[in-house]
Amino acid sequence: MNKTCPECGDKIVGRIDKKFCSDGCRNAHNNKINKDGKNLIRNINNRLRKNWRILESLNPDQKTKTTKTKLVSKGFDFNYFTSIYTTKAGTIYYFVYDQGYLPLEGEFYALVKRDS
Image (cartoon, rainbow, N blue to C red; front, side, top):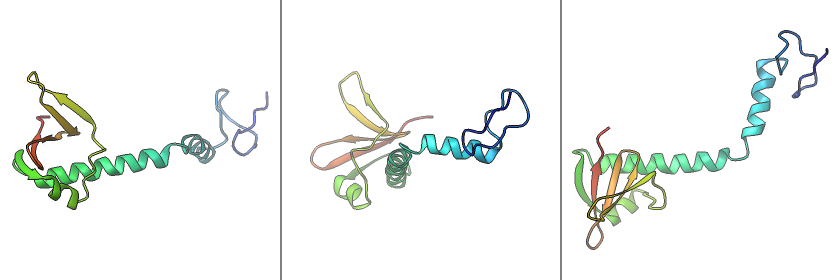
């Protein structure tokens, strides 16, 4: 049975279950399939990474306070976080991976680091 590569159309030689003629064709094919959401995902991951770096730089001692103005001036985007933690008392912490923040009175925020 002669199978052809779905990427370039060349004849496939080798194992019976082989789907592509080469690693290059396999990679090109999979890259085309996965391309649609890549820019969206890359942009979101970049925003999360930036938020994490900002929180980490402002919170070297694992617990501190800062202001919304300082967060925003560094480029922090409050729309991007990875999880929400609600305490038994109903306090809501927002986390970017292990770095968290809690809105306080006025424009203040408590910064915390969750243990790994």
